Image (cartoon, rainbow, N blue to C red; front, side, top):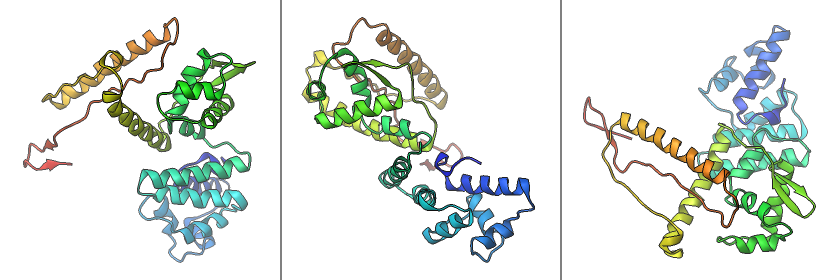
Length: 279
């Protein structure tokens, strides 16, 4: 069975533990629940099905029943907190605690690098800038960034990306490695939401901060159908890929730009059956 640090959903870990025990013995939900100190014979089955949840005290008991101890037990308990968090800041705090537990015990967390990369605007910008500033110090790179960032933050970003395999260090120069961080996990989606919020703020500031010749803002308000929306998404995806190819074929990097493709509703939809708002 996989290590607990390879999970971000405690219910999946509990289900996999049960399946593994069941595979090699006559292990039952009743036995599983009793070993965890609960009276209802189906309680843990209901937890795994998402019909109820573990309390912090329950997480302690279930983790011990699964023979977790030390940092692995703490990781499991923190994972329960992460899964029950109601807001992105709460989820982020819990996940960062999970990462710290794993790092302190020299264990890698699945999607941990992707989360760190996408949670801040600094890493993507530095990954583009460092390779074209051979011999530059972290302070030099920080001064090239339009947004305020310290030399220490740049140094941490460079160290992280080298360790994650996103940059390769060659003497005092950096080269982009042919590695891409992609994941559909909920934690990476959360990190991306955080980055989108940051970039949206930067975009708003750019309206007054930069001359029209240095930035481009256009907009279109339109009434469309659901089918139109799908077609527009396809066109935007095609456009994004074409622009990415232009950047890939670029002969040099003079500045690092951010392109936001934003398409969002300004009205609620209407249910055709009863005219009620759909939210």
